[in-house]
Length: 143
Picture 1 (tube, rainbow, N blue to C red):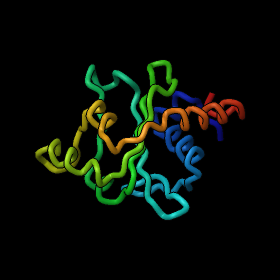
Picture 2 (cartoon, one colour):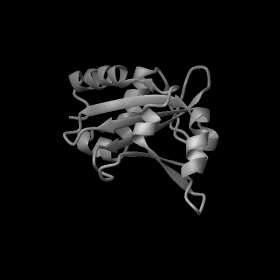
Picture 3 (cartoon, rainbow, N blue to C red):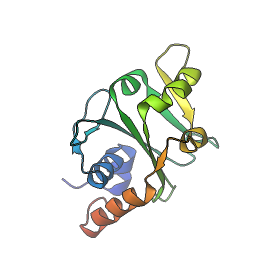
């Protein structure tokens, strides 16, 4: 079944698919992660359209994602749904930032996008994910 690019991005499916292609991971959705690498690492994929959460973009993660995933990949889309930026960071490096911004009820933390993307352990994977996205476009998926 084909779905539109807009619907795929809104549902988070697009980011999961391009990340799985770019890193040769298996889609394996669970409560704390979306993908699993060949060596068993659990990858949580987060996505957001720029300005959907105001002028201060954020990465939202909850307790299960922090506890169960090994790596978090975050994809930020432009309003026209092109990929703006994509980053990857091992979950353990986000733990101090997560603890600092954990909501009072302990359910989740909203992390400042700029702080996460500028973290010294963050890897820019934008080009890799754009290449996977372009390969899908050539095949006619998510148009």
